[in-house]
Length: 97
Image 1 (cartoon, rainbow, N blue to C red):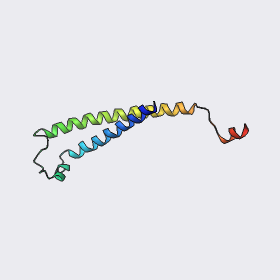
Image 2 (spheres, rainbow, N blue to C red):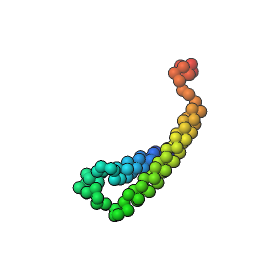
Image 3 (tube, helix red, strand yellow):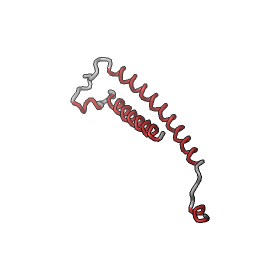
Image 4 (cartoon, rainbow, N blue to C red):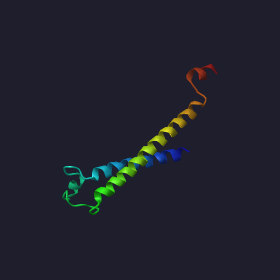
């Protein structure tokens, strides 16, 4: 179960990076990330409907990000509760034995 938890966190971090990249690729009022690659603001890497495609991809990644955030939060809370039910080995308890 621990492997699955950390694998899910890794996927979450990949989604975060993709969301950041897609947001930075979008055209802004000034020049965006596309100007860093030598492209003019009027040129488009993905064709004429780049703005529409990037808006849809951003929306889907945002929905996936928020859903994964909520699920990981609930999962982490459940793991914390299950670990609190484990016997506590404090120094007082060890010294009294």
